Length: 174
Image (cartoon, rainbow, N blue to C red; front, side):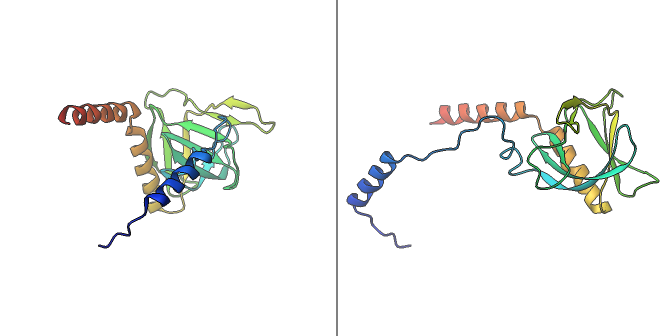
């Protein structure tokens, strides 16, 4: 491979340019969830049955960072519901009213720790014992179950320990 040799003059100009106008990373004020949803583990439309009023509603779901977020529309910036997947399980569910169902549930039978936004924008704690969802096909349902299981089993603490261990090993071998 041929490499083009750059003169020290070009490097000096590049350095001066970067120094006079450094790269700026946009500041996160903590209120913008856009970055949270930038590269999700999975996203797509699912039907969700309501907690109090048992009707099926179409919602846009995003699975990221061991949480399942749902929105009314794909263009919504803020979720109408958040379901942390910690201590939950997921399984296929046979439902007579809808095909291709899956269920998120707490194996201890406890209420799921989740929250949703009410009509007036007030955030309230969810009251679900389980979340029943319906996908568009058996394959889609199975893909969601697999992605949710993978997200549930991901332990961020384990990842941190693994990275620290690797860093220590590389420092001692240098």
